[in-house]
Image (tube, each protein chain N blue to C red):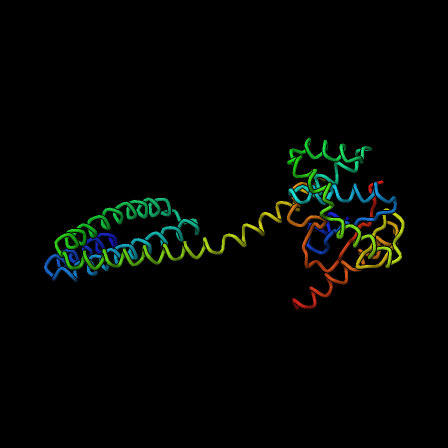
Length: 167
Length: 137
């Protein structure tokens, strides 16, 4: 019953949206979709609670909740269609969205550039960790060229020094 | 144990040349440093330790077998590029009273590898961990 009311409310909102100006269409449709979603979520929570309590009707309510979820999906698709149509009809809004998208892309590119700038330090750190790990695991000290006669953290508080002669 | 300390960043391991046997010791130390010039200090050192041929030709042959540039390596050896470095290490060690090989020093102290020395390392490590714990709290 609640589900039907929600669907009716959503449909009414869509009709109102169609009668409104283009700028309001998207917002109205979103509100309708949110209302439908919230209603169905409440129904699903109720069904889940009944199921956990072990009530005899729990199976039916869960089935209702599943059906409601399917209906909700259909409702949302329906709600989105007018907003898409409005977007296509309203060129200025589309242009603004395009500008917004371009701005977001630029911001993303800047973030990627920043990450790339940080990469050399991180890469050196990874290489040093890998180098030490290789030494520990294999006992072979290959790859220590960067530190010549030293291995490990240059700032390590313990310095172990071996004094040796080949002969 | 040393591996664990190095891996965890508590310790670093260093090697210093001692030239107790005169020119042959110097040549061997120079060969290792020339291997380091081509990015293979430890690789050359480890392989060199297992050989009994410390002659010039032996060092060059080892360099070639490790895929180093043999010509560049020979030039480095002949020009004694790292003579000041290896002699300096030996001189510093001698001034510190180090004349036996191998000798291990931890933070400048210690002698031959012994249980007491290992105990000392573990105590230092425990102190550092304790200090780190106090710093966090």
